[in-house]
Image 1 (spheres, one colour):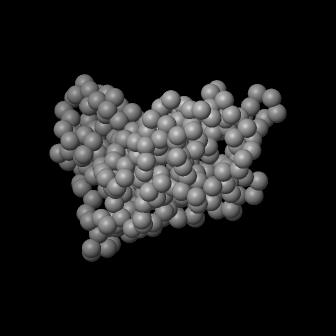
Image 2 (tube, rainbow, N blue to C red; image 1 turned 90 degrees about the vertical axis):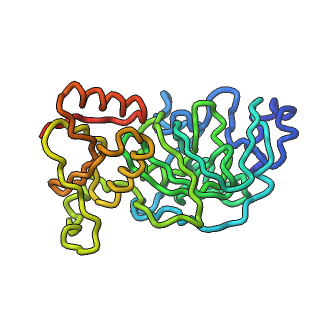
Length: 308
């Protein structure tokens, strides 16, 4: 990290003296953090906070940048030691372990592009990477935007964010593909990935404009998993809609873990080129409404009632 980043950290020198190799990336840790409101223009000048934000010449098609591909890598021992930042002590995992947590995602961009991460690697805002306070470095994680169900796989190679309201700091491209750039507080689910047990999974749900261009050929493939038929008529709670069957299946399988009490009610319904994940049927609107409320309160995602 360049020495200029430490000009604002001089008052914290005593606090950070014993922190080893973990150094905070933020320039003004006592007040506002660089990613607190990443996509909101400053009141004067119209720029991003501390000149952070999108690059001047981003790649032509960020959608085409592939997700990180999990692979076995030696862990960086220097980033596995406990460290303290702003009076808060963090104890990173020294090995790959199951991890699943919900929280708020932020992102960091051009101000840190080309600088060293906690592992000593160079930060590339257009790569699929992320920063986390305790996950092993490097490691891999699936991040799902709980507002739109988009999901990506990132390589975690940096420490942060050190704001109490943030769970993970995403690279610019990862934030773009998840739909995180537009606002500050975006709830996400972060799940660690064991490369030894990883199989290629959907990158994220197709954008609406892409739905019409995706051939719906699942029914014509003899090896494709069948889509569940609508189980009778009644009232349903729709939890997500996808342009690809495998995305819907991945989301449904995750819901069976998160909403185990509803696992026998979860199904995928295909119509109009979309694959809808829903729960039901329920005999009354009141019962369906209660289930919709349970889903919203448990996962903080939108649930819509439909009747068939």
